[in-house]
Each structure stands twice: as C-alpha cells, then as structure tokens.
Image 1 (cartoon, rainbow, N blue to C red):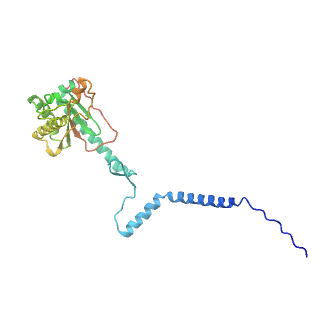
Image 2 (spheres, one colour):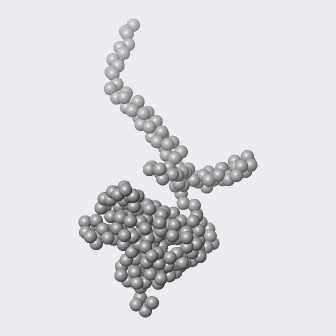
Image 3 (cartoon, rainbow, N blue to C red):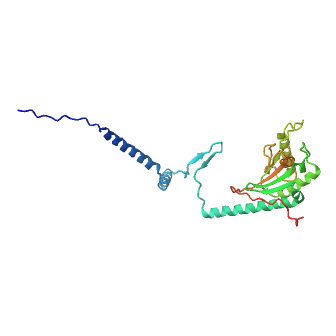
Length: 266
C-alpha cells in the first residue's frame, strides 16, 4: 500500500500580527476605561453625597475641591459658589453704599485740607481698599525728626475731626526716601518711619479716635511712589499715609478722587 505523502508545513511569519492586535485591543480598552472614570456626573455625585449625609445624620459638607496655593496664600475653593440673585443684589447695594460713604469721607477731608491739597502737599485718593490721605512729611516733621509742631498738629487734628465719629479701621504708614540716616535716636529709616507713624496714631488717639481702630506701620524707603533720583521724587517719597480701610472691597476696582479742590470751595 502506497504511503500518503504529507505536504511539508511552512513556517508562518505573520503570527506576530495576532499578538499585536490583542495588545492594541487591550490598550484601547484601557484608555476607554480611564476616560470613562474621569467623567464624573456632578449631579449624580451630589445626589449620592446628600443621600449618604442624610442617612448618617451629618451636616452637609462642601464637595468643591480645595486648592492650596503656593507661597503661603492658604487654601481656597476651586469653584466659586453661586450666589442667589437676591443675595447678589443686596451685596451690590451694600457695596454701593460703602463706596458712597468712602467718597463722602474723602471729600470731607479734601475740604478741611483744601489749601494743602491745592499746593500738592496732600493727596487724597479712593481705591477698592479705601481712602488714602498722603501727607508730605515736610508738612508734619522737620528733617530727621518725628516730633509734630504746633502748626502741623492742626493738619492732623482736622483729619481726626472727620474720622472721629466714624468706625472704619485706620492704618497709618510712615515712609522715607532712600537717603540713609543714622543718629542716636534713629539708627535707620526704619525707626524714623515707624516712630512718625506712631506719633500720628497717638495724636489721633488723643483726639478721641478709638485706639482699637488705629494701626501704625513703618516702611522706611521700601515703598517709593516716585523716583529717588531727583529732589522732587525724594520729597514725594517722604510722606505719611493715612489709610481709611473699607469694610467691603471690590477686586480690580480703583476710583480716583480728583486731587484738586474746586476753587469755589473755601
């Protein structure tokens, strides 16, 4: 009986396609699953969270993510909470009234210091932070000194009379130019600016302004408002700022108050 001749089997060089196809399929499935679990339905998640809270009898907890900012700025919620229309209207109305009150205060100060404002020795500005009264240091103090003269007291007393019956916080900041000072009383500009600020704060307290409203800060020459390369710039930098701080602030808002008093005013 003749033997049946078997055909010789050839090696399949394309078997790798099967493994490759399986790998691609698994990889595709992996990314589909990853995409699916990344899409969270906030509505269903909120319902589930509320149900669990009610079941366990706990107080509602905010589900908004918290982001910790670098530089020690603290934590804040990533999503801004929605404010009801009525509450938003009330907030806007309160902000409007506060801005009007600060504007009236700025104008009252400008009126009592009208001559100094016209001469450019006092500048009054209103920002989102509040009202800033910038007083040239030469109006209040002799060079290198922190004692207020009799005439200078009248300027500060006039401001104190406007602020006495108010209840806003007041921050008094002393500033100098970059000319170095070294005396037995004031080893540096730090001490000079700080003592000048505290001198003004003490005078305000003596005029009946509650001390809990007052803060004195000395900045030295670290916050110039003009160039120290000119005599005019250095003169501008030697100043005392009286900041009347607003209770309500609006971000990115600055409303300048004209620094010139109308000639019709006394």
